[in-house]
Image (cartoon, rainbow, N blue to C red; front, side, top):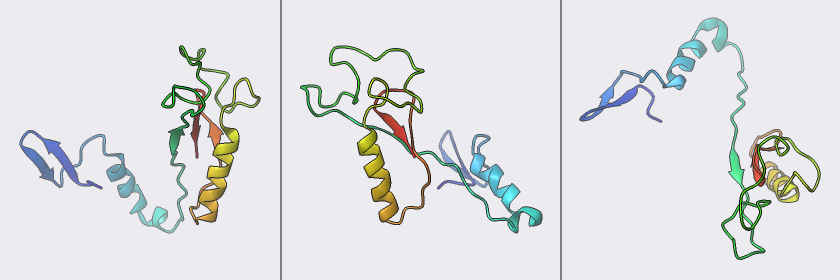
Amino acid sequence: MCEGFVWKAGGFTALTPNNTNFRHFASKIFERPEVAAEEPWFGIEQEYTLLGTLTKFTTWPLGWPNNGYPGPQGPYYCSVGAANCFGRIIADMHYKACLYAGINISGTNAEVMPGQWEF
């Protein structure tokens, strides 16, 4: 979006990419002739959190205890089973709806906290 620009005191400065602008560095690689002939694939993640609706805590993440926080990370990432995986049916239906809408994605998994998912 702002490739080639960097914010400095007083405003944006053109044509001086920030050292954390990794798109700028990737563009230099993709412009090389031996790379330009290839068709790149990207592994961009879209993460989201499902919120519960069945309790008074309607803005609380799905699978979290009503009066506290879940256990430490570990059992939820790429999890299976009712004790560790929350909202799989919703995430699967969301995934199918995206495919039906023509969004070219592949793969989904439960993330590191209960109720968190990613494509």
